[in-house]
Image (tube, rainbow, N blue to C red; front, side):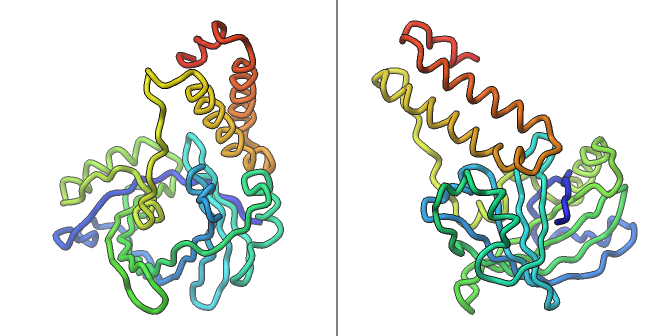
Length: 249
């Protein structure tokens, strides 16, 4: 099982920007089709986890992206379409909690790029597929570090914006396609039971969000995040007057 840590930025683009003008060395063009999988209630998307099957030049790869503070942590396993390989299903055991996975979106991406300033800058022309029909299209620029120097991304972002790129709201390709509704949060005047329920749900989802990283191992951040979530859930079991601090914590 291959693992990766991605340090990247995403920008919007239109026909006015040519990444060839950035100089550097060209990157081999690619075309691949990614089929994203999630449960009926979209638990993975809600947790910021992505599971997809990618087909490229006859090669079948399953990719799992987990959220991390320093950039998404990725796992890759060879496998045919259908159900994900057992290695990835095991990592997602708690998050899925018996739910069944199904395809939720299929994207075909034509990618071209340049390697410049210690990063690989790519222009993705994305088609959203509905069966064999193209339902919609969009274009996205990604810049991913090749050398481990995070400051280079900020400088490269400024350079790309001067060339005509625009900032995005940070959504992934999948979120742009599915555009899920944000969960409603109870207002300040909502009943106490609604406030507590919302807090418990948020901490429970925090547990699920970092459980896969704990199962994979190797990152103290995931263990710490789960400990914090458990501590906050335990606080909610105290009398009401003792719970006030959790909101500010």
